[in-house]
Length: 505
View 1 (cartoon, rainbow, N blue to C red):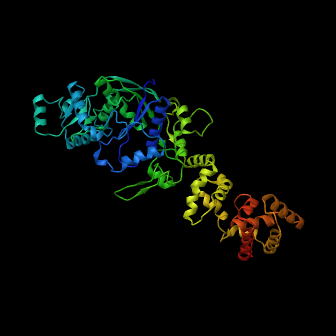
View 2: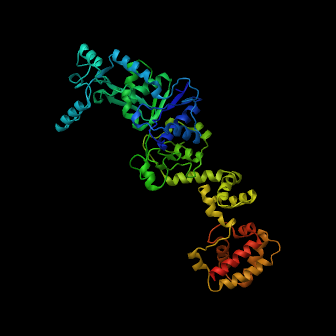
View 3: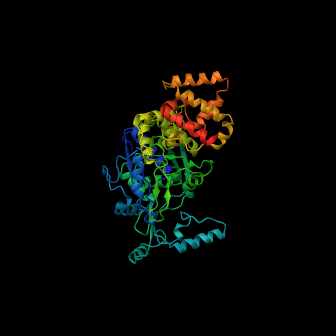
């Protein structure tokens, strides 16, 4: 099953890479690496009408950021190149001709108008028009016309497509690595177009030919391709080639659980659906990306791995290496996987906590610089160690720690109303005298002195500690008060208490 594993990720460059596409790439990558195989990138750009110029580079950049780069593809180890279908188009015509020669395909000259008329006529009679065995010999194609008529039409430059001749009265029995055995009655299938009048193949022909020539062993792709599986299996049979193994991944569903996740859901609910920010060159529209929203690439990948797969254990945090080791198609679910923006944030938070204070400090220093704060590295690292537990993103650090770098200029109105009473000003003035007299301003000593003073006054600790926190932080939040005081120093502590007395009393 797993000798010489070769898998491919074959996106169309019609816009940014949706996270569903990234998940397909990830599962292909994990499968390839588990069996020391090859992960191939192929660009399926046969649909020239929807081609977007910067989309291919975006796909490559996204895979790099996700840390799942391809082994073989455009401009890299081009063993079976070229890897863009538009550069292979000369190739497909000969395979379309081969199918005609073998009696598995035929020329069809029906115009769009003629086919529309058939469709309308069927609809009026309560039927659905399907181009296949039951009517193909009555339509404009090489099965119904004589060889001379066909030759004349082609010579005259009449437009034609090449259609697959689906066999009649057969039961196809197919295997899917995730869904098991699938049976299809060939009488229900239509004769799909394989080659278009513009000289380009359709997805069906190009993908089978390329997978065969690139020696792909396993096709791991989205569930939306499941209806195409019968045709693809029949094409392998028609060419006399061995088919790869197929696995169809479940859909990624909207957070509400019904329907496929789309960019619209992200826009509406405020989360990105693309790995990197994307600018549409025509409209100038900018779509949000996980990277720019502050997610770590390993957290993003860990989250995606769990959309439709589970390891069968309680473990949820997996490094890429662990995912490679644990991944198994047998543990991929058949049913759709509901996307959760909250769970995605949870993953990011877990990864943030796993990073060292030094790594996080390196990420925080540029944010401080932007705010015009030139902070000492060791001091910043100490700040990070005190606040990181409450952060989901590095971007949260400033809100959680601004008071370590600058005096509060405003005070939370609700907290001030509740905590700053008529007598508080006098109490805080007395506290400044106590603090002024503390020689050794260490955490332990300050704590002993201040708590001793509160006890001697026989008042509740909250009457002093809450206004003190409000004075130093500007709100009732933040780490241990004595840690804050020691970090900002005695002079700043006194200054902040005096500022609060002036503003709040």
